[in-house]
Image 1: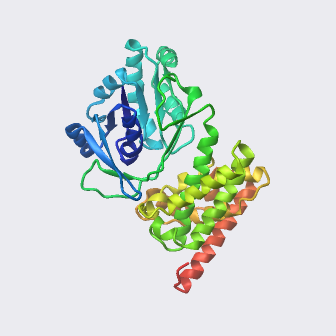
Image 2: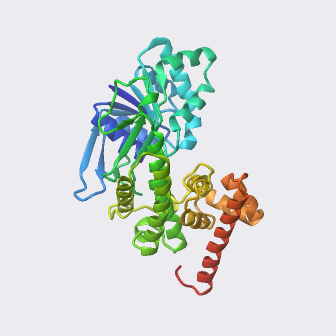
Image 3: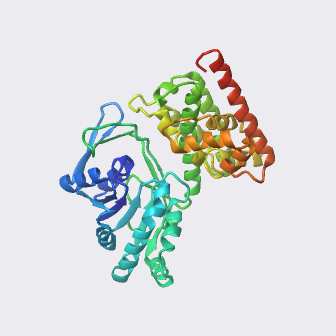
Length: 394
């Protein structure tokens, strides 16, 4: 069995690659990072380490790399005969790799009628179906009909924290011991392949929302609250009771939404959220607030981790006070190295605050909520100015 995996970064090697290898797959990693790809080609193996007591090492073998910028034809040849295609490359990059995947699938279905699933393991809702839409833009109507017969794009939800790290070995990666990979089995074309350690669900949406509104919302809350309090790392921030209190309140609100929407039990979600907070407290994981909080404009999106639960809680008459407080802090997230952060800060200087909120959140149909967000931004600003005036740590 063989898999083609787009994205040879830490998540690709330390999560998806590890899971595929544990199921007996050889892996063709596809990336433009020459250092990593060249090392994969030369060595054909690498190690990962669990960021947990004992620091267990796991050896991954039977791997290689393909540089899709230099050798796109090799990617096409690999996909023509592979048993699975996966990605962990970042939501914004899916559009970039779509033309190459389209070329490969067009070539494959002319020669190989074995069913194939293309699974985008990205930090987004509906990643595989989004990738399908982008791929189909580069297929003829005839190719679309053939690809429809043999290729599935099942959505997936993935969850594993990879700490910031700088390793001498470019292939070595440290990851937390917790991992979760859920695949929508109703969208699969090849249900015979069922990976051990992966959960297959008839409806993925509850799991995607549980992860998005818990891990993603929670992690970002720690980052933005910690930043407002003057911290630089998640490890430092999560030691502050005020940060723990804020993320606990936020998760209580998203939990009320998940309970209202899906068939989770209260006890199940309380346990899950307690585990999430403990993961953030993992002393073996060090992550910069600058990294976790980066791309604030994307995180403020209409269907993203804050505005979406706020919208849905408001529609149900449920509390979203803590989420709203966190949103106010996002607009003050000023990181020089993050282009989106700087863009947001420039927007706040150049445009009326209301226009910035409308532009970043897409809340054109809810003027009341826009005003609530504006009030939250101003409240966060008042706290910031007070602390700066008296030179005290927030």
